Image (cartoon, rainbow, N blue to C red; front, side, top):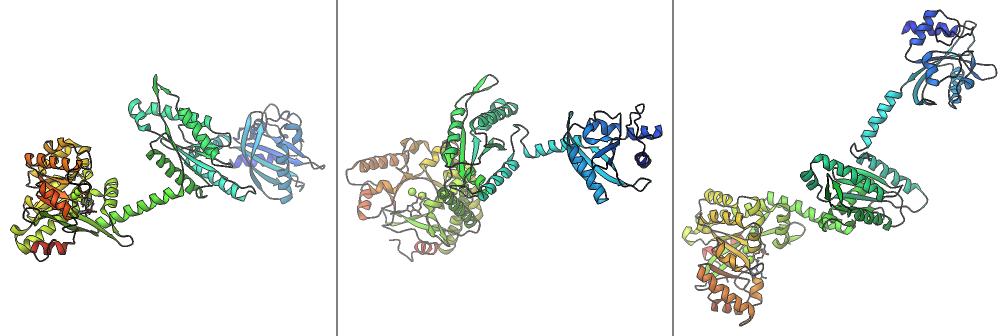
Length: 593
Ligand code: C2E
Ligand code: MG
Ligand code: MG
């Protein structure tokens, strides 16, 4: 290489110009070997000189340079660059030659030369050369063709910003475009708004599972073209992830512009898609967030559109939801509550309160129902009616339910130590249907009894009719195992749900608890009264105990006593009380009524 450069220098420094067609090197007289070496170089070498009139002449050019520029006629050199090169690019190069001579130093630059063979991405270095006479009019220019590398780089860039399957922009590019749109919009003089649509395919997993992943891929490609047909030329479609696309509506006057696109998409989705001869119908759920109703930060817009899309799913899919700040606040505070509840269960910040269950025939304490209480530092007392549902939805019910069983057993153990096992009354613990589905409740009960060395007769499990309905077979199985431990099972809230009398004899239960909603409507001779009488008789014939819940006055007590009910629970006797007071009741130090 070094030798080659020397040759170039020598060649370039010669002053008598003539062409040398036999070697193919268009340059002044030079030894043949030098021409051969210069022509063999993998980069272009051109020697320029500056004419007195300021025009730039090509003094010599090797074969690579000739082919790169597509020089037309090199038979007579030197010749003006503009006459050799038809392209308009020559002025750009000529300026650089002048700049090199003016600065008297090396000038390097990258540029794109448009030739008949397409665009060439070139990297050039221009070096001023002083000839033997001390003239400084010559410039040696090397030109490296970096087209292949540049195209590869472009290709890599394309892949970095585009989804390989659909060819659409990916999340990164979408975010960049959105950011650009928001910044330009904010700097513009007109009032501006833009919208982000998050489009999620409903039940896409089913397509993958039924027809295979390559069919799923084909479906996604067709989905991208369906979406493209529904948007305007200014709008940008991107694929965010597996079955999720996003659309940027960059400039709109009102939200209707965005919802119109959504309507077009829902209509287009009504057409069946042909997947290997099968007609596939599917739908999409769309969330819309705009700078009108949402934040203006790009990441927030995508997040809010995503949130709205999830609400569309909850609303039954195949629809559009426009982001509303209020619903986000609700979800956020619910999320906050969930986090706090999780923490409360972990730290055992919950307490059990105990409501006495009375034997109506003897007026003695028959047992307690354990009811969970959450004393929240900011919200005060949070009703179990609120947090049990949240716990069920989030799965927190499993550790919560385990804790309630364990805490009841701890309490029983203390009572036994205080008054002896014979004087202790049983505790009923509520167990949710969700816990039956997700946990081995029978094993939890068995372990707790073992741990505290308790007879099964001191613990009772309450579960509601509606929770049985979710998976009757599984629950029935668990209840058999629970009863085998000597633990009685109560059917809670009877009369509120399906009230199927079938359950009374089909299900492994020992006790029926009549819901207070039923009791509160009770009047002598009315329908509720007659139904309850009948349930009482049926329960008795099946050998079940009955507990009437929610007794608030003497009328209630008289009626259920008349019906022959044995047990009762309600504010008339006592509200749920803290553990210390329940212990006093067990000891007989505190009357329960
Ligand atoms: P539940 O099992 O039917 O419990 C009886 C509910 O009725 C209790 O409400 C009790 O305070 C209330 N109650 C009792 N007598 C009367 C009365 O005379 N009048 C009125 N107005 N109410 C009365 P609480 O403690 O708010 O519990 C509500 C529900 O939350 C419970 O209904 C139960 O389903 C659930 N729950 C409470 N603790 C737990 C728990 O640890 N685990 C599970 N899975 N559920 C629980
Ligand atoms: Mg209960
Ligand atoms: Mg109940």
